[in-house]
Length: 553
Picture 1 (cartoon, rainbow, N blue to C red):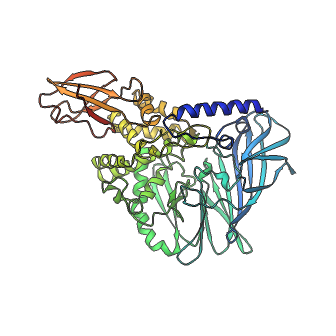
Picture 2: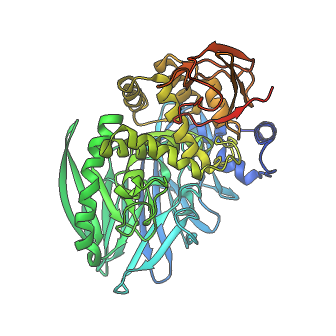
Picture 3: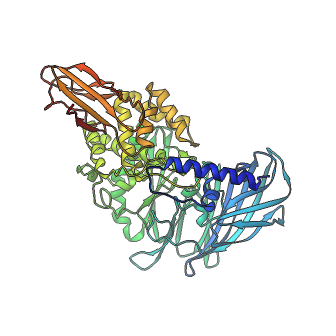
């Protein structure tokens, strides 16, 4: 059993790591509730989730739900007690195992279940949690998550949920940790019969139940908890198909009836070109079994697997704005491209700990650059990613503290994307770079990963020592400074950086035209330059996101 002494030891180690990792961040105090949510204790690692059946009835008028979730799992060791998660404002009505109620206790949002006998390693078992209550209502979705109760222009109910970060346990009982994705899942959502309901995966049946209808959606592929969703409203539905690398991919579109005329051509303009571009760069769409859906939502958007949430108001850019400040971002609908990019990074490849969420956001941010390149050429893509630097804050590290369900800096988007762009420059071969991105999605297909695994893969496949680059851009706040001086036909240069012995290669103008790699370290080095190069016209390749400083010494 998981003793209190061991738990206290783990708690101490978490706090110690957090204190060291966040020296440059404002002091953050983590609680036991954070640890229960974010840490993989033996009460969580003792079982591996195989299958869920989530069955929920939504009372729109009362803003409440009643339902159940069946947990089917494989025991990873002998145990008689486990933890699942459900927000404390929701009531656990009972837990059934082999037809009998199990005793349980609650602490914050964690629920501890004790079995009448020991569950043996490698055996498959199941239990069902029945629950009820009023889930958290989102104040500013999708960032401040929860249930969203809205209405369309005709006054009809329009309901959904977005819970990344907040957690799926804000509305359904689950093992709420990204490291353990369920292998498959049945989602049953019961809503008033006059409304449509859309969830992840494929619709198996819609069963009339008096004034309600139960809609049953089956997800064939592994899915992370926060992706599980629903959309309720008066929808129009149409279908299409995309001839992809793995054959025909079904496309389903769900827009509010009042917006369907506008949605049809707007979505058509970007969806197939986006899929073609991303399959080329990242490999086949990861969820052919479940199809691709784009669903209009009462919030801006989210990467809900196989049922992407769309709320960009049928505008180009990000609600009509260009996040790259170059004009290029107005050539496509940001939400379609970005949220669909997450099907590869975030949904196919999922970070085990939310502290590593850069794996989701940095690569998906870079997908915007690649889509811009697919549309308008490589120079346009480079201009786009450089333009996003205006959004970088360099406030706290991109990697957050582990084991407390805490993400790092929002710089994981734009700074992370620019870091990947630097790696692309160092690889210096777009076919090789493309094969690395495709390889990521093949090697880690439908898997949860750590930063270390991704870092090691990128280093091994590129043949470049990238560890200090990752340390500087992901684990520190500032970007490195290239200090230089040019005199007597020689370039003198060195790095000034947080990382000891930082040695990232960088492209500079050693001659009148073009860029060549040099290999600075923390110590001054020198190299011959063309006589036309001087302090006034020396340049660094702008595709490297660094600071540049002329030395006075």
